[in-house]
Image (cartoon, rainbow, N blue to C red; front, side):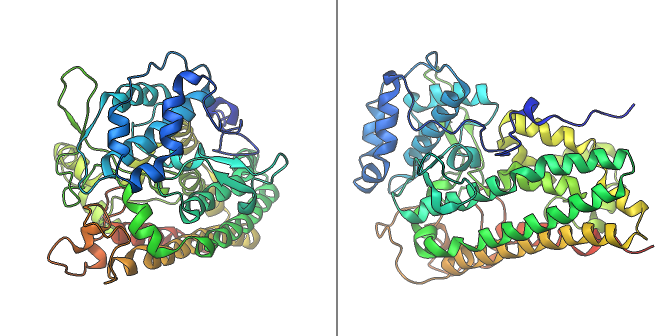
Length: 441
């Protein structure tokens, strides 16, 4: 018996808005009991600039989560606490490796409810951090949207988040469309599968054009030196000042350090959904297909011992997605059948061309992303101009010049997720094309 095709509503996914919430994010928590959180986040740029942020948070009481009454409220609380946590950790001349109870206690509880780690994730800074500028605004138009919270108060930071939000909105209808293609495969409906793939390729091309708009209002210098440091996590951040991670002080005396990746576009469920639907296989970074074949020949015990070191970064990033979205990807991976269907009918030139066009457009999207990374991170890491902060702060931006002022090699750069940035992106891009294409029989 075939597995049922997932129903979007069972995972909190909207046919119109995709992984964005079906109800618009709350602008403020309605209960004035949480006003302190709202005031802190609204004033985040000024508090960080004046270096009063940690003092202000240290004076906060530990608030109960018992007065959060709906999922939009839980999501709003999570976003607020994520911004406060990262501002507290990275908002001084040196990072702070301990979060106070005023943040830790509610953050741990809210994160548990939402089945997502207590850190500023893609969900907290993008999916749950936007509003339309007017009642009938088009969520597919970046010019019609604004963000609630930023660390810097700059248009550059808002724009950085809004590009991703607009991509999520524009691509939302493709989620159900690709599930319809899965259903069409089961009935051997070649025409419907072909039409779905053709429409999907066009959407992917649109997404690439939206991504290119990053350059319009997000300056690379501002991004690299002012925005990116606050998005860093606590995993693999020893050189940036967090050798063991961060203690979430919950008032119990537990001194356990936690290490989490920071916010990353790799935490977007949308892009991983595309990979699953097209049968794109991503391997642990640094392991090509031949290496994986060799690894598979070793003993099960050896593979188990080596698992954590080789864990596929993209699969690890699912841990940072909202629980229902993570389960959706897991369930979809069990019913994905489009690639096998196309491979079995590779003599059908229209079906094969439609499928390969999707792969080409997805690879093109990743090419564009790599060009943005090159301009916004790789080139800026080699920039000898003084950092905007100008205060000798230790963070992800200053990491590049921490070792005697030497310019870093591209291969050494880390992403906010804590992984090797360029090797990871190159491998993901390369795995999307080439061998993934379906050839004529």
